[in-house]
Image (cartoon, rainbow, N blue to C red; front, side, top):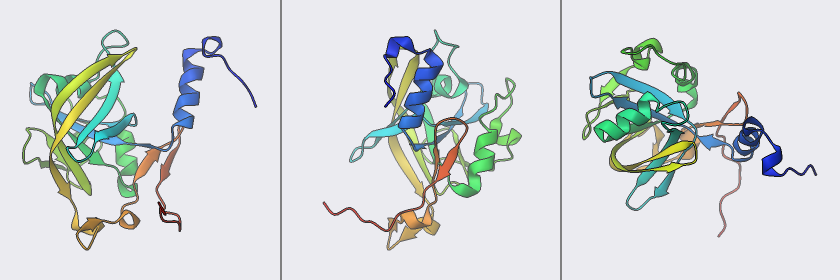
Length: 197
């Protein structure tokens, strides 16, 4: 067993261990619209939920003091709205293309050839081909070290009939994509074991 004191590692080395150990990480493919009306789409693999019966999801992004806010976080805070689109295997390549920086005023939807659909409750687009989209209103944000954590309260769900069995999401029909350490992704494949307790 190799042991490391945190202080003895570089920031990059610490981040690599954490990102490899906390995996697979779900990906929030977040769509927003800026105050100037520019549509933005970017993947975030530091994403999860913190409440489910009254759904609140979160993602985090570098804060102002560490490279400046990315468009997604800025738009979510300034407009109070964002949508989380679930990434499945068929969308993997286009999702990866949206992680590249787009020039100011250009939309990643256009650069990655991703079809938009309008949301019902928020003024932002969603990924038309996503099997699940959650429309969120800004709930709160929190600075933690070099990150800004953005919380969104889910206001509306879009769920494709293609992933339903008897009205419920069937994970066997939804090959979600997760991020692993380094440059790697994985696709969910349920094992033949069901929770017993």
